[in-house]
Image 1 (cartoon, rainbow, N blue to C red):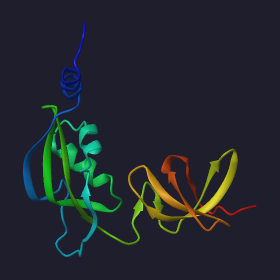
Image 2 (image 1 turned 45 degrees about the vertical axis):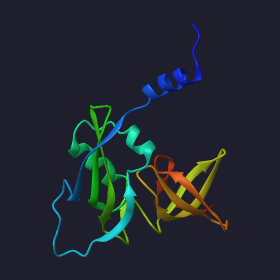
Image 3 (image 1 turned 60 degrees about the horizontal axis):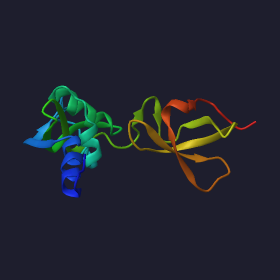
Length: 163
């Protein structure tokens, strides 16, 4: 069977997930928003990269909201939200995530926590300097001017000091 280049491109394009915007909303949340609290913008356009949209497997809009908000440490609700349908069966939400800024903890870790983890077979020590998303945070290693992006699941927290 002989394919021409345009026919091959059409076949290839047919294999990628279809993304269709189905609505825009000023504010959306699955949680109660406390009117007396002064919320801050934490992340703009969260959940909106093409890759994030196509990876979404939220079966309803509620799950899509949760996925977007939970990816941002301290996130509470989404403003200026766009809702997408992926492959006519999944949903994704993109927008500005607002929440509590400052001394937020995520997965048990907060900025300033002493942590330890194994790196190239050695135990290393450091301090959490930033909470990136739902998978990783930034850690400044003891005795090192730079920092690393480290997965939460390999970190141990507590009174960890170098021997």
